[in-house]
Figure 1 (cartoon, rainbow, N blue to C red):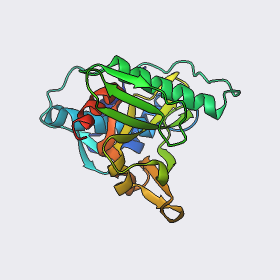
Figure 2 (tube, rainbow, N blue to C red):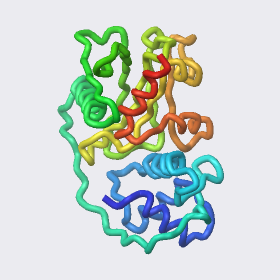
Figure 3 (cartoon, rainbow, N blue to C red):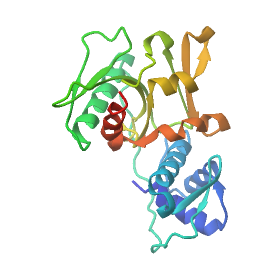
Figure 4 (cartoon, rainbow, N blue to C red):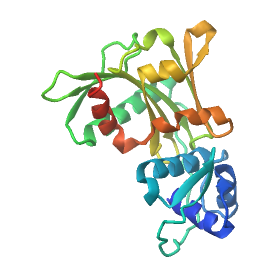
Length: 252
């Protein structure tokens, strides 16, 4: 697949000025550089640029000039232009896959990511019952430190511009031993989107939208509304999830 960041770099270099992620994506789609089954992959474009800036700091090729608006970092040493190829075939999953099956698939994939990556070996356990809102129990080997993870997933043919999810307030404990993972399963790619949100429970309680008199917490992460950018600090590369959990365990 073409790199979203390389595509954005090429477009921003041509434009000579900062552009909104929506405009960058629009140009890329018009040139056939991105594949899509209908909805625009603006969230992917925005997320990749945000994470690149957050992780590389001054070494990033990009700078954020306004909400969802990006320009080129003048201090970055440019590399030769990257050749952008045409998009390939679009894939779809079976319509017979149930909601429960989708949830199980996403939870299993998150468990795999936690097990495969990270500087410290972690063990994952699936509760017999998840009626308390716990989908995954993660324990550091050789230690009694444990994290309780709730996983909220969405499935689609590309990461939508707006990611929405709700969770019962009663199932969220105001303690750093609990966190919620919000992930998007890209059915076209057959895998969890490259980026996900890892939100410690106390932070979710603080920042989430309070619905139904506070009984429901609403999570909205996207690019159409400025307030949705408040979750940008929790957006991480999926392969960094294990390390984020390990860091979180130190706060317990």
